[in-house]
Length: 410
Ligand SMILES: *Cc1c(COP(=O)(O)O)cnc(C)c1O
Image (cartoon, rainbow, N blue to C red; front, side):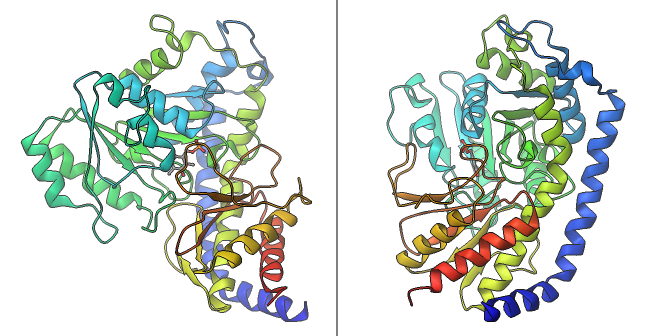
């Protein structure tokens, strides 16, 4: 125990510069949130709830304006009726694509849970089953393949381009906002009207600018990740141009009813409070990630990103190259969780994923990954994907527990 506490102390000294950067960024994003709350004069009125159809939900409608302002977008749809980020991405794709259209992913294969949505893995309800085609261009050296993208856009008409920033369960790096900006400028030189959709999961409030602020048409993220601040009980957001948001709303609910319906069922206050906490919770997650990166590197493990690399998202990878270590590490995270600390996570066949996955998430909100959580597909090189932590202190405690657990039977 003494040995690890010395290591913790040493690590914390070494990451001071990164911690300060994170605090600076947190201040910038906190100001954005507070300014939006003030601008829209948020009051207790906005905490009121609707049931049934959810007509005239002032809180819900104002929350959407607040999100739009914070994210720098024309409009936003923020709803508990979105089950998850995947659902919001799905509704956005189905809302914007029509039979005969082609979508193009320029960040390689999208997140695993979209396989059956797109039809990469067969499913009778996929986009492919509606005659919507899919193509992809892989990244090269963690950057866009500009040549291929230019060529594809010159040769053919695409309806929608998808950019996924966070790496998902791949081994590539996540994509910083400057690269998103650069590729969008390139795309716009060739096509003015192609819809550019960004999967922004895990990236909110990590950098100062958002994808829509650098030219994306629409972006999507989950509220049980960054922007929910650990308070939102479920839901997701879609932010972008007014025209696109209207179409997505008509797909989420009903053509002709769109965003006018959708009861908030008592969650308005939680969404507002979650957004209010989000800059600080994202900062805690980032500090935990930096701490994890440095301490595991010091222990001899490969990590991505390194503690002193610029961060794009809240995800920290530890490349264990050893199945047992991955499992033990995740179990150690679980045992230092506030909820279900006695549960022992084991690899299982999760719906929507190809390989077995081990998942440690002792969270207040089921599956929430803005809370400290760690998961990984059971395949080589046995990478842990760790993210979140509502506070830095709990994050550190979790990581210490994971390290001790991993080393306990060596
Ligand atoms: C988490 C995530 C999603 C959506 O996941 P849900 O669990 O459905 O919210 C999509 N894309 C990426 C890159 C993600 O990290």
